[in-house]
Figure 1 (tube, rainbow over the protein chains, first blue to last red):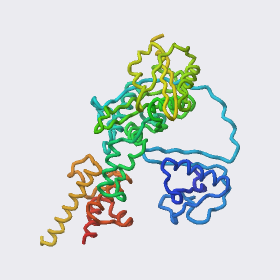
Figure 2 (spheres, rainbow over the protein chains, first blue to last red; figure 1 turned 90 degrees about the horizontal axis):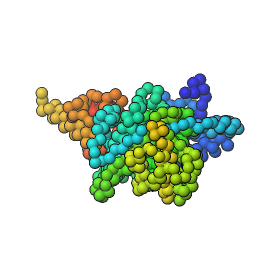
Figure 3 (cartoon, chains in turn orange, blue; figure 1 turned 60 degrees about the horizontal axis):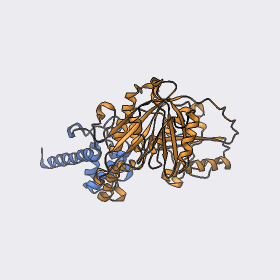
Figure 4 (cartoon, rainbow over the protein chains, first blue to last red; figure 1 turned 90 degrees about the vertical axis):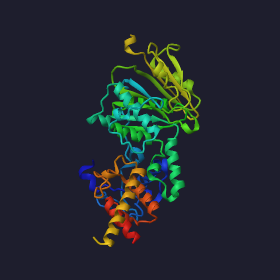
Length: 359
Length: 93
């Protein structure tokens, strides 16, 4: 990727010094990067005296930090379930980006997967690695594959890099959590199951699904409590509307209910959002606001869409991650649909236009 | 074949079977035991295990056989099921 510059790049890792800060690891790494830029020093990779074979040649090993004027740095994080991120920081002034037209975005298709019906995963996702699949991963993968199929969207070749997945969820899979705890009870803390451990992250189902369907585009998993699935749709719509690095984003929510606790059925609802003109209802407006500000979010989405008050049907999100998204299933598309959610940590709204066939 | 050799072979087979069982039960490998050849590499194109599976297998083996493999030892042992059996028998000897 860096071509002829690769040998001269200084490479450093902070985990040996700071340990793994779990969800805060990325921010911590970014702080280290910013400190390195402002100090003009590259921190050493402590506890690394000799590099492994094929390690980068510019690895800064244990020892005194070399003085090194750094203008730009790439801060990368690679995490379980294929959650990889990179941030570029620079000391140089950056010209403001020209504001661009928003791209049109359509909800090409959507699909559900519930535990009281057969999943047909072997047919929907033949490449799925069947090992260690919890109900959350299975249902998310089934709903995502069905949404692609319903939208006639084939994910092959270069399209893989431009097709991504945004997921809203409330918690890790109860089934995997149980397997994790059982491994500790059985073998002790020092010998807990590492494969179960990797499923103790919220984005584990998204990782399974993206691998199974060959999606290599943008991915994230968000949680705000009830209505997390709607937030993931809003974020995906905003991403496609403002950026150029993806064409299709699958987005929705998944809930694994604990059958042992009598919580009801497990389910996933996933929509396929497509950038550019295509069939399916257009995403006309969307907004995110703070907690308890659903009315403001709804108003902002309505104004952005240019839809009159009282023209749209309003569906308030219900309980759970997929709460509210079920309204898609019964919507007859003769009037615009405004999906609104207010949870304890965020409010959001998404306004879908009528389908073209309703003129 | 003398008795000593027969004992060694029986021990190897027994250890191999226990390892196959571990792989199927703990790593949920979707294969029949007969398909898991002692000479197939555990990682990469062989059984397709990854680095997380490697640690899983190691902690399972340690718990099941009551042994602790040092890291360099484990690296050598974890090439194939055959090399893992060798390491375990050596440890038990």
